[in-house]
Length: 103
Image (cartoon, rainbow, N blue to C red; front, side, top):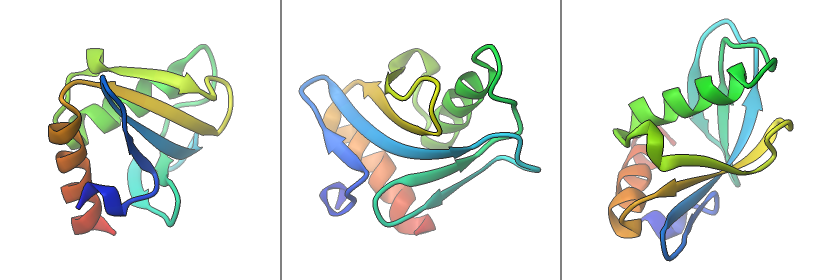
């Protein structure tokens, strides 16, 4: 099921997820889009606050430890690629289940 989502790619050490971020939103939210996940966060894009808020929201939503997350691409951009370390099949299943329920 997880292979049906173009924003989700399996790697040998986990998965990568493509995001489009909207900082300074009124409320934090995740939304499934065609080729990426749209993330709205309250934090401003200053001093890494937005990136920390993104990781906290994703970790809470997908029940994955924050320490498993890393920003692969787009540290200062609204378009980001996030890597999540761990069992690729398990993480992809969790994200795929969430995307199917919320897409």
